[in-house]
Image (cartoon, rainbow, N blue to C red; front, side, top):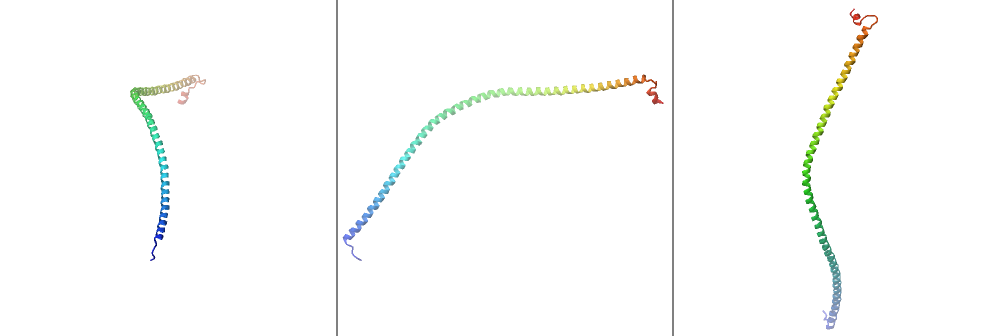
Length: 161
């Protein structure tokens, strides 16, 4: 092997050192760029956190408004329950009125049926009476006609012969 002189060794070391310096500068630049990006990201996250905090504060305010609205609704529902009890009492009397009206309607229907029956009977009796009087009138006319027969023959006498 050949012997390396001190100058050659220094030159090689300087070249290696120069390459390491450039690599170090490159890495340092990359780290600085990364840190700059991270700083921008942290700034954006802080702004987002501030907006979220504002939202939370506004929702707490809205929550208090909603609590008041729910409290008002609860009070109204209690009032409605009390009036429902009163309505139930009125409904009980309404049920009795309902059944009384049903009974009155049934009695009215029964009265109409009975009245229709008697009207029908009167009609039947009227027809029977009219038929009977027409028959009797016809019988009387036939007897009167027999008595006035010009020949003097009676229809019964002709039948007997």
